[in-house]
Amino acid sequence: MQDDDFSLFKAELRGVKPIKHDRADTGKPKRDRARLATLRQAATVRTDTLKVDGLSDQFVIDVGAEDPLDWAGNGVQEGQMRKLKLGQIPFDGSLDLHGMTVEKARDTLWEFLAEASKLEVRCVRVTHGKAVRMDGRKPMIKSHVNTWLRQHPQVLGFTSCLARHGGTGAVYVMLRRTMLDGRDD
Image 1: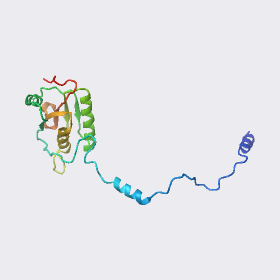
Image 2 (image 1 turned 180 degrees about the vertical axis):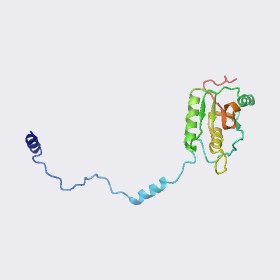
Image 3 (image 1 turned 90 degrees about the horizontal axis):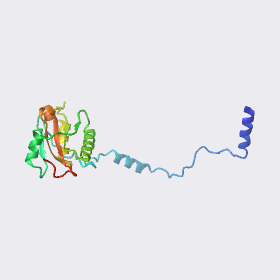
Image 4 (image 1 turned 60 degrees about the vertical axis):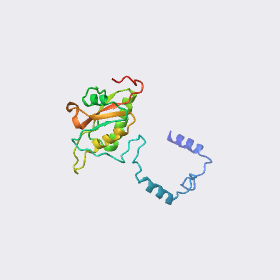
């Protein structure tokens, strides 16, 4: 049976000429090594001080581990901020950024706030922690969250939480609502 297979194979290959070289012509031009080196060098330079999401790390406001955070955007009523500070506006979502890198925390926070806004949530809690760093500098995630929330277009204001909700290691964040504008009490 093997002889039959071999003779059939030979019969099919009748008239086929063997290849004289083992390199295929891809038609691609030769690489410009100098240009490639320049492109590689340019790729190693960091240019991400401002991300497309609009949250900049260019000027981070350093805050201490126990420093309370408090900020209100233009036009936010004092009464609303007072209610937020007293925990009288219930939060409908919570995010914990503990243990994340700054980059991961930024992306996670942006996605969380986008989802909360899409669902027309009025208030959320963001736990940033208040870890004192080994090098003695201010808490990194807390400082960044303090800066990013001021830049986010959906954030009306934020304040440190009551002790039972995380104290100075978390913030209540009041969000802009689009479909329910005018219904905030």
